[in-house]
Image 1 (cartoon, rainbow, N blue to C red):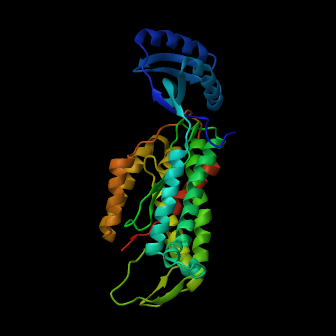
Image 2: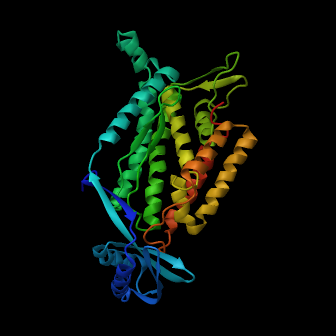
Length: 380
């Protein structure tokens, strides 16, 4: 298996002429009659829809229909419809482009530079300063602990998605890292991965979505514990300082190391622990059950058609958090959710096979993690 596809693929809907649709409808119907009892059939726009009852398990029907429909340029989507099964045969043409990872590499290198600058400006560490004679180089290297730790968390998160998607033979891009140079305090807006093909069923959709946050935490939590070993408790200086809010998870980890913090004092964290804090925040934001976020995909796998309502309730919760905590951060995130992320999630090919019990338990754990990882006031 290649690490990335030899050619990049993207599926787009195509509407064939009406006469061709009638011919294809008859061909496809004859290819499904041994897999389902067809009660009626319709042509809806560019798709052909068969309603009826399956004669085999949904997963087997999906695999056989995929193989049979592909020569005619169609992809089957199995859904429940009024107590029966609906097979939506959609004409998807593949657009191909020459494979190139140049953009991914350039964005990653720019993100390395932007996080290094952010670390040097805001979260500097003297770890490498003594070994470098140049003051400018020593200043820049002061950002390495923060930048290296944060990029390790983000890379683990994104490649958790990537390798899980490849395991399920889904067409997926390499991560696109998003640099955010100073004055943006963390140096990056995270990274995204493009899913170029639908997930096969809810179980694979869940695994691809949950793999990123869970993998990222495997690096973020040890990073915080290590960074706290190099952190200290001191009195808050007059005039106050920029404060990064504690989630329940962060409070617990700090308590394990330092116990109760005296009044008028605070933990001044090492840059490695600071990068771990950012990792917890990124994970929490991704776990919100909205649209194309990891939590949105998890919500679709768990609740199906109710995922849109859950996303809208989550948006209301974000606004309520902003009102209650007087934190402008949540209004900004709510605006991004509403105007950029949206509420809809692409369905898998097989929307009939239920989520396994173990994944339902893991989904509940992900929702609990959202509560544990989210700081009421991220930055003040």
